[in-house]
Length: 139
Image (cartoon, rainbow, N blue to C red; front, side, top):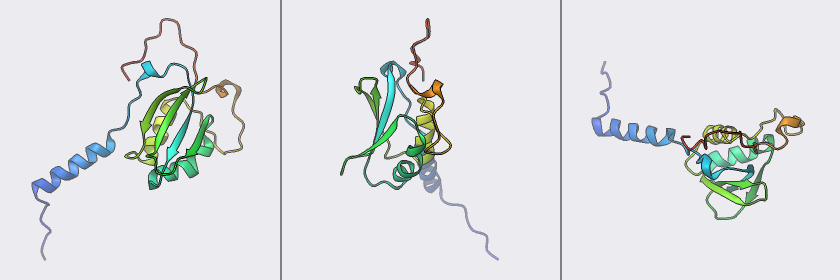
């Protein structure tokens, strides 16, 4: 009976680099996101992003889908007057990472698409600035 040999060191290093790249995600610049009110996902053909769009977007309040043929998928963060605050590339993110990001940004997730949104979340993710609060630039 032969035992399999462990992979050579370069293969292990490549696997470690791929794992590190897969776990690093976009971190929002909170200084640029004052007045964040809603967002849209701009999509092309990526499987993970498409799963998020078809199965998860209908559950989020103030998050919509806009299909732009040939465009790289991006989460476009918009202010209360629909002004663009920031674009976040989604191509290299998993469905779970996109969900975590959207929830971190403060978007309300319903249990079902037709579930009503509680009154305290109707304006989510927009939040009034707290007095004396830091700019959250450390996130």
